[in-house]
Image (cartoon, rainbow, N blue to C red; front, side):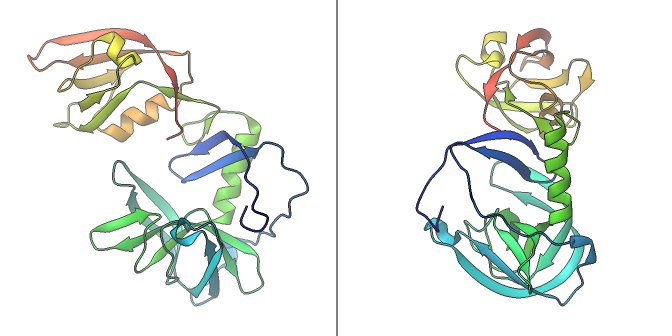
Amino acid sequence: MPSTGRSYTAQVLGYSVTSDTAVLKLQGASGLATVTTGNSAKLQRGQLVRATGNAGGTGRLTTVTGHITGLGKTITATDGQQSEQLRGLIETNTPIQPGDSGGPLLDASGKVQGMNTAASRAGGYYFQDATNDAYAIPINAALKVVKQVESGATTLAVHIGATAFLGVQLSPGDGSGVAITGVVSGSAADTAGLQYGDVITAVDGHAVTAPNALRALLLQKHPGDTATLTWVDQAGSQHSATVTLASGPPQ
């Protein structure tokens, strides 16, 4: 923590890819000061806000100021490898920088109204990157994910617990599946015989036409679960296999 210099090991209890929100449990942490949250449903354009974060990854908290320039915004943000559409965002003109993502967006009274998540630059909207407009997840939406994780029930929107791992890198296909651009050695996909250039067309009988659709199906599973994959190889032959998913990093 920047204020104390201490670091903690954290466990990911659950997360929502579509909300870009995760719930972490710190180990060996107690007596930490907590924030005061506001009601993001009452925000208005023009309000003064402050964005605090770890700009540049220096380990020191910095704060920049600005105003709310829009509400209920939708963007497609990317980390350079995969993209997600985020809805209902707070738009501000605070000049956040790489490393600020995950930090609080505070109102004039110091209440947390949002969580910084992305900013715009030429060519799109990027997680932890900024030059112009910045975007934050409304605190009401983030707390809704927290409550869902605490309930312990995995849904289409919220994943609870460890993440299942298939072991493939993907690219958009021709609309009839998703193309494999890489296979992790020793993974479930490797064991099943999937190779570069193969096209996955279905998981458990559910057709997949885009990488995000495949990820969404796998996020409903956990390590040790099975999944039946259907794919077409480069010669045009169709294959099917049931694999046991391993444990991987959160999405």
